[in-house]
Length: 184
Image (cartoon, rainbow, N blue to C red; front, side, top):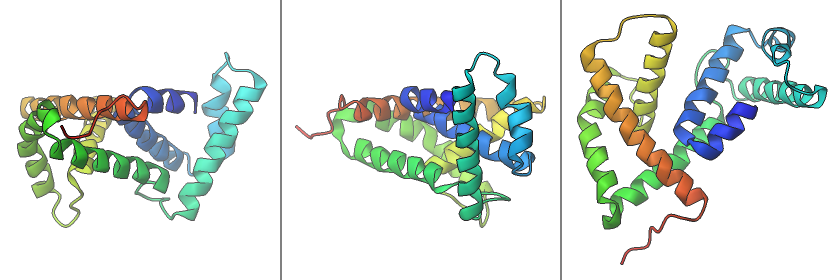
């Protein structure tokens, strides 16, 4: 909860990947709040009892959302889908605005990788940004499992990361009303 709110303010891409990881962790714990409390929350010895209660309430609300929204086995809660919708909206605005040529260049440098990812998705095609996040999340999972990652995959994820980092920067700027998207 503390990490999530910090990431949301600082880097929306990291926030979204973190939240996807939390969803998967909740699934791994079979939605058992007592186990989550014992194995995760209680290990935060630097938190006050009030902060631990807030954290438990946060996990409980996520569990409730996941159940109500039917994403117990896979998928993402609406809260996370809304972040992607916001990012897609900003992405489209940035591409339409000639002031953001650097962003457009990063996007077009990333596009061949996006096309490749989407071509491998078969029937499960997602939009371009979600495909980028899926690729980075997949790499994160491979690294956590200690699996080898090919040079080509690393090259693709480096470009995707650079692109999403720029989008995240603009998201933060927009959130802080520091992004001028008005055309000259």
